[in-house]
Image 1 (tube, rainbow over the protein chains, first blue to last red):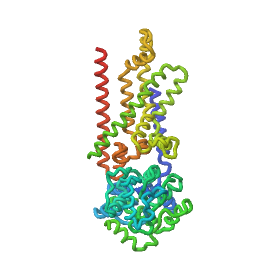
Image 2: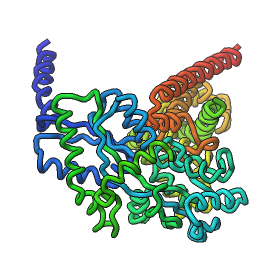
Image 3: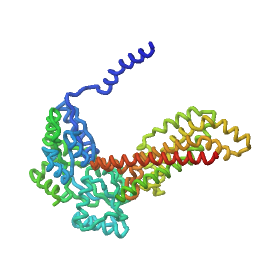
Image 4: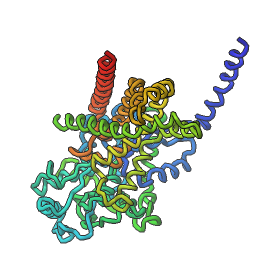
Length: 297
Length: 216
């Protein structure tokens, strides 16, 4: 009997220790931010969160990397207070349902088409992006190449579908059209392995390329000047979120918005060019561009 | 709907093939482990530790092997169902060996001597010993199958989750979750569980019927 008590007492003494280990510091508030994985994977948000903590040391920013679709669902269920996503069409439907509010356009970059160096579809000579997609379709039909599609309802995938539709062709169920249902990183690696074409945001491509992971594909079509290939990242507040967390969510999104240099300078040293751009250059025009993308014009 | 059905069938076939392949070497391995006296404790510990190897780690190793710039790239196995089968068969090997070992250990020496006394050769001896602990060995294989069909890392990394080719149930579930389609993911998850349970039950029933039929 005595031994049983000793074990019990010992265990009770252990509990505070375990608790202390799990919660070393109790921050005053925590802020849950669900972010799209392409933004998170580059490390931009960790960097931003660190800068934010310098100004507001009493907040713990918890970044949850998920797809844009899942991030919006998290906001709807109240599992995240702020979200950063890049899917205008879907964002608009959630805005219309009044699930999210307080939009701030935080960063932009653009999509590129990468493909094998030999460029069997000849897209480097394409007039515009729609022509490039038509060329890929023709080359695929002739068995010259593959196209790797995310096929995961991500912003990149939705944009890709729009491009095929604009080109007036449908690649679904074609043998050369590989639907991987995977993240941008893995899709790029697959494109490099299979020597196929792919639509990617420039940030993920640049970061992965610099790490030497995708040496068999190059940028063959650069969408930096094409509004059809603009990639817009917006921050929102979940309507269900309230109290202190909401105040900090507002502060956090405003912090990114009012410090465009953080976004513009991120990655320049590491990768030679910025991965994302602030909306400084666009001014008010960015809202119209976003609306254009949301309405699928 | 057809694609969902295909995914389910593909999951069962791929994991079943992986388990069958793994049992080909795992059961003889478990058998030889029993008659090993030196270092068996160490081997046992190593195998039991490998049971819990993270699937993504194994997936990553296989990806590096199968990658077109890797040593086995010339085989062209990356992003094929065969790669998943190979990966999963490696994954479940420690599990089948350690479970098979434990179920054989109790009776192996007794039946081994019995087999020796009736003049059985090496293969026959193994058949007798394993046959006497068949329910345990079958249970080991079923557990291996459950681990294979429920694993995500390997199927994702070397399979690539390609629609109509390498998508299995776990990668389909992961995909639905990233899409934010939590309901579909739950339905797929429950289906996965039901299929695994019904396969386990039917394999157990078949092996029991077979044991009765053989002894009568």
